[in-house]
Length: 534
Image (spheres, rainbow, N blue to C red):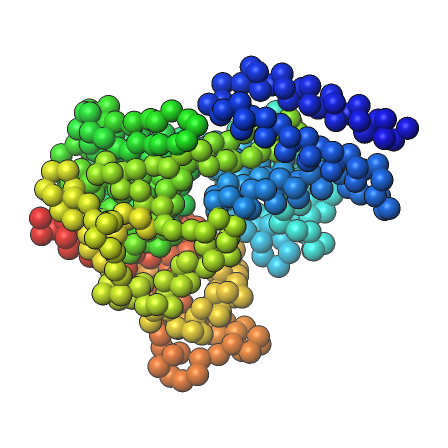
């Protein structure tokens, strides 16, 4: 009976596949289509045999997902499968919004502490304040119960229009407060910071290329121009990329009409060209683009276009080197296959995809570590490109390189001495950020009253010595302490900078945070120097 069922199922699968092949627009030949049909039949037969005859019970869903992952792992490093829940987590930041209660928060001693409610969001509308502790959701305790961050977020999020019944503990009020918050669409911003570095140089930093990133960048640039910006720093450090179209739209704000931004080529998909539509919001001023070894994909498209068109200079370290285009294929259960279908090329013809061996995912993942070990991140002379990867920019004929990321016009080495070992250990154990959370919880109102504007704060605020002492004391409890006075002094300097930045973030926002953190940043300082010289 089972053999009869197996034969019937295989025949039905074969008939279905044959029908699909006849109506497919695939350019594959009849022979390759026939081979594909046979191979798929083998996969289906194997699955049916395992489910019907294997000695133990099996999780057919997991087996299917493992098989898909196994196939994709033999291709390039960026083709990937995600299940339904992971697909939602992956796509949410790129969609530009999610549905929830609208608060920025952190965890302090197993309790959710509100850093800031989202302006004009559902929590702010009902009166939830920075510094509030959310202790229950729908009468279920979430504080002091060792609940995971993911589970807490799951309880707070929900469909737009649904109600989250929150229990709130507020400093200075004895009883628990209760709020009914109607969940809404909450924007996820790509722009981390937009501020004036000097009276004439502005900086815009964004962390990905999502659906809303182009609009956010345009708004940020227009605001900076109103503040007197003449020249612009585009900070793409640690920007892992996103939508290719978002990169093209942003590039159009800087390039002349008709300028090539990027083009793609694939085996089975039509080639595409992306050109500037012109008339952008920043067509005249000088530009410096900041990149590092974690700038990838769409970040490399934007920096490569500006470099190849001689529209600006690129400052920092060689970028990641991801020049492959993935097309998402949605599956019926909400899962997704992101399959590489093309390569992209910068205007001068460069493929910036770094070398890889199919199936050697671990070697590919270790590339940045290997760069560090070979000294590339600290010594420009250790970087060598063959002549075959040499290209020229389109207007000035400057030499640029392909085949392994975007090489900056001005190399800035990684400062391996910037952070003391003791500081890195204190930070890794969350000792510094937890100390700041307690400090803000206790002193938020006093600080907000003392520093009503950011410029006053930036000039006058100093991290209290008692807070620094608390951090060192907690470090010693966890066997973390500086080896000598020199390391202690360096650690103090690191703590003072990061805590001042965190306080600025909690009182205002991320622009103020980066304005503090970037005061002595080598890459930003070099960009300012170069823009001032031109």
